[in-house]
View 1 (cartoon, helix red, strand yellow):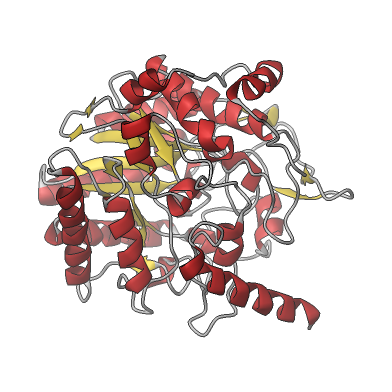
View 2 (cartoon, one colour; view 1 turned 180 degrees about the horizontal axis):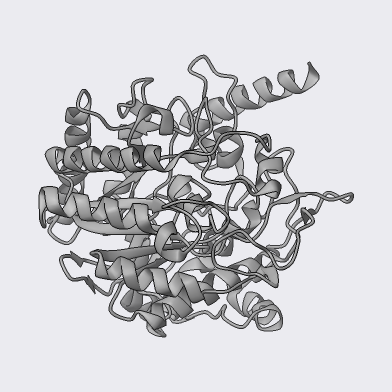
Length: 474
């Protein structure tokens, strides 16, 4: 179903006024340039502008986890793109925590490859912009939990998520002792990040992966479940161990999922519908127990206060899980093949993003936060971002899918105060479709933007679609 039918900003604002409370736009190009060109000063860093590239996985590493040719190409494009916060994608801390056989993995055998790709990012950025002192590149560390390949690792049983992810009700849950051992894998990965030259690391606590799932593990027993203190224990322990080992050599960042919602499936008409859920809802993170389709940020705010105390200096606000409710995190124009249609107007989903991020940023004004959920707005994403920055609803404008389509968007913002209609992501979800395809000699197709990076990803999309359709006929 088509939603983006707007010829100008006035038409879009008119619909936003009807459907939303938070979605507003700055129309003046000079004010857009000023707001998004504003430096961001953190406790231990300075960003040269208020624009970021989210950690976008390319699924293109070598089988042993090293950055491969397409990884290098992607980060060269990002480095030359002008954003001063380039959030390096999810990198597994151990082999069984990879989401696919081509997810990046850092270890003692390949740390030199990470040092070289980071040096390339700095070199390319400096060649175009003259300096790197105001550029930050956090390395995102992850364990993919129930979405690990080939074996799932789950933190607790939520029967609806189990149903959506194909996990039997008797599947074993990771033990407390195993979680405690996992803390040391994060520590080892952080030491390798220092060795490779990274100034910052990110704890990935979003999108349903292991640390994210633990945040909602209210029904889990033991040291890592139940109370909020227990559910955040692994994060506290990891950050404490890293600080004790490397001192102040690393800036702590976090991409935090702040609202899980519930799993959705295809309804009779092809639109997404929630799997029937009980109330009060006993699981999940950032959800209202009386209505888990709505957020309740009480615990989220408590946890963020603790994260600050434990040393986190930069927060990237995310919501939803792409595996079970993709419209929550990534409002789209067209679903990937086989997935459900948007059950709400995308502006309603964007409003949810802005509402949650705005409330959190205003609650913690001295903790710079990165906002998400902008890509569906196409050329007007920067107008919404400028308004949010001007109104202190967020400090940093983050772009994900659009960075694959348009890696140098920040240059056009700085030079013209507008984006090129011919280059912006149209949220047709081709990148997600490719990412989900496994019928490849290496077990995973690499992902990118087929419409706007045609020479590289057009043939990959064709091959992936043919493999998908061949599999569907069997």
